[in-house]
Amino acid sequence: MEIRYLSRADVESLNVSMKEVLEAVDNGFRLKGLGKTEMPPKPGVHPREDCFIHAMPAYVREVESAGMKWVSGFPSNIAKGLPYITGLLILNDPDTGLPIAVMDCAWITAMRTGASAGISAKHLARPDSSVAGILGCGVQARTSLMALVETLPELKQVRCNDLYPESTKKFIAEMSEQFSSLEFIACDNPAEMATGSDVIVSATSILKDAKPPLDESMFNEGALAVSLDYDSAWTSGAMTAADKFVSDDINQLLSTKAQGHFFGGIPDEISADLGELAAGLKPGRENDSERIFSMNMGIAVDDMVTAKVLYQRAGEMNIGVMLPL
Ligand SMILES: NC(=O)c1ccc[n+]([C@@H]2O[C@H](COP(=O)([O-])OP(=O)(O)OC[C@H]3O[C@@H](n4cnc5c(N)ncnc54)[C@H](O)[C@@H]3O)[C@@H](O)[C@H]2O)c1
Image (tube, rainbow, N blue to C red; front, side, top):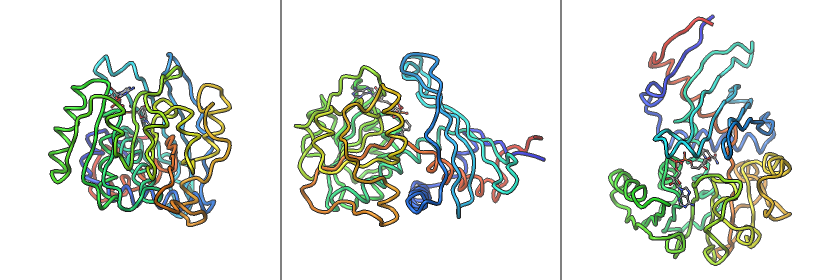
């Protein structure tokens, strides 16, 4: 009995594209909407203030992917020059339960999180959306932009703001090299970033006592807000002002709210989850003036479908190290 171990470098060497991850994640959401997934709300431990280590198990039928991600998020790592998000993912054989692979999960997390923002845009942004706003110019912001480029055919301008102007600059330098046809604007503050933005993705630090920099006045008519950072970026007023409030998993949203630290200000009515939209069970955007909020907390189904693509590719290319169980 052996497992395939894939380091971060191994995972990256597989050259799986954002387009492939978007397809896998969209299919995962569709299967979730059809009730073909098993995914309990994620439990976690919290060794330090504002830090988490979460266990994220899921089984996705049809794709036949089962396993668990064990992922850490430590905002204090930014000052130490360490990544905010690190962790490992275990895949199991759904027939026997045997572990078949262990892999670094930072790439998976970044790509599937970006893809979830892209899927939100696919269903919930105005099709003519041409301006994207990015708050928090880190890892998840980069992959979110990669996904928005795939799902918003009219995208022309990207307005960026980070707490640290150097991070905004670095983001623009890197992303403008990748997407040379887009115009990038470094914004001095969140309000300037939001001006004229059709889609705003927030990927700042998740903080229990956050002072959200984005309020209702920055949520433009017809815009889509995608939050990857819980309720740290947008005020309660902005969230309750949304015409539709969507999440990637309502169960997880309500269970996290019940733990007491987050989501006190979310509206009582959650319109849909992304699975229901991907499966065509509920409508996405219905007109050009709706303000829609998508709270994407990150779900294990997204991880498992992405990990399956990597596992198969690694087998084909014989990448990684086989280790005895
Ligand atoms: N929803 C999901 O699926 C998911 C998945 C992974 C990470 N996350 C969350 O996404 C967030 C970003 O993660 P990352 O890996 O990109 O981290 P990162 O450290 O690479 O980037 C975060 C960036 O946000 C900036 N920032 C922090 N507070 C800000 C503020 N108030 N205004 C503007 N900029 C601010 C930081 O300076 C940094 O550049 C974290 O909160 C993380 O927990 C969510």
